[in-house]
Image 1 (cartoon, one colour):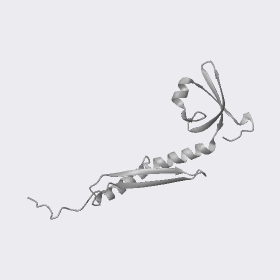
Image 2 (tube, rainbow, N blue to C red; image 1 turned 120 degrees about the vertical axis):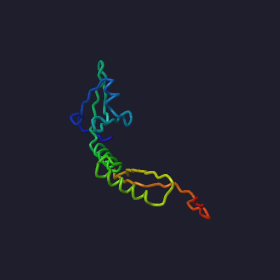
Image 3 (cartoon, rainbow, N blue to C red; image 1 turned 90 degrees about the horizontal axis):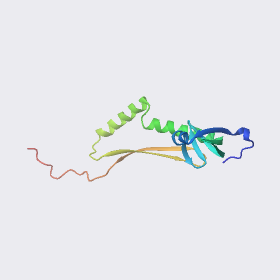
Image 4 (cartoon, rainbow, N blue to C red; image 1 turned 60 degrees about the vertical axis):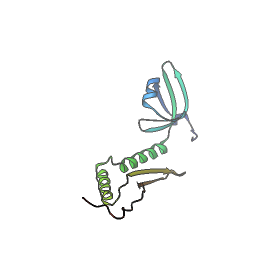
Length: 139
């Protein structure tokens, strides 16, 4: 975690136990996402039914997560224009002589410099596609 030079750079967030379980997505015990923003906990305090977190707003990780979410939604067709392109591509693949099931696979990797690399692949289960010899007779 980055060193904070002063407490003025920290964000103070306050939650009840219920809000913590419903509104926060935890990465690990010292990092969570709240309303689309990533936070690193610097210190915490419980008073009554509230828990206070003094946090560092992790802008770089927030931006990375937003880019990844956009990339994922683009690939999986949540944007109508991309959905049409995906359906057109799938229709083309179905015109090929393939009797085996097909499946899409999407892989995303992030390197140490926070660069995203994504791969979209079409997998076709390979089986023996040799037609029977002689061909069957049509009755």
